Image (tube, rainbow, N blue to C red; front, top):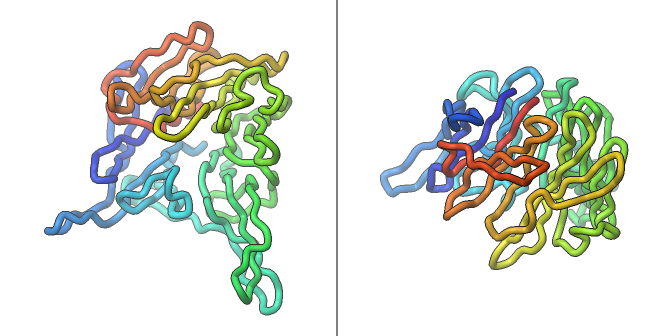
Length: 301
C-alpha cells in the first residue's frame, strides 16, 4: 500500500509527501516548482490532490500558487509523473466547433479523477456545450468519463454522475440528478429517503471497502461561517446507514479504506489539518504523528 498526501507550506503552495501510518511523513515525493521574485510574488506550479496510479506512478493536479482544488475547479490540470519534476499534462478532451452547428462537448470543472486497475482514469467532468457563434451554453451536465493515461477517451461514460472512486468491484460515485444518491456497483443509497443525512447540504466522495461490504462517504451537513461535516457508512447487504463520525465543526475530509475496518482521512484540529485513522466499528479516531498541515490523503490498496 502507498499513502500520499499534500502538505501545506504557506503562501498558497503545497508539497506532495509519502505517509506511513505509524510515523507519519517519511519523504517528500514532489516539491512545488515555484520561484519567488524580489517583490515577494510567487510564480510557477504547485501540486495538489495526489493519487497513486495502478503502475505506481504519482498523479496530481497542477495549480498556480494560491489556487485551491475545491475553489478553482476550472484551473486544475492532471499531471502524471515519470519521476520527480518530470511529468506530462493530460489534455482535457474536446472537439472543435463547426460553423453553424453546436460546439462539441468541452470539459470544465474538471477534477476528481479516479485511477483504475486497467490503467485508465475515470474523471468527473462538467461537460459544457455552447452555441458556436455566440458562445451561449445550451447544455451542461456532470458525467464520469474514462480516458487512457494520455487523455484519450475510451468511450465509457456515466451521465449525471460525479466524484468517482474505483475498486476491482467497479465504479462507485454520486448521482448528480435529484438530491444526490450514493451509487455503488450493487446498491444505491438515496439521500432523499435516508434516515440520516437527508437534510444535509450534500453527500460527497464515496469509497467502497476492499471486501465490497461497506461504503463510506462525506456528509456535509451545513456550510457558511462554520462547515459541519461527518462520515456515513452504508451496509451494502442491508442498506442500513450510520454515522461513523457524527457531524462536527472540526472539519472532516472524505476518508479512504486502509482495510475493511479502518479508514484514513484528514481532520482540522486546533487550527491545523492532521491525518487521522478511524476505526469503523468503534469510531475511535487517532492522529497519525508528524502529519501537521497534511490533507487530501490517498491510499492505494
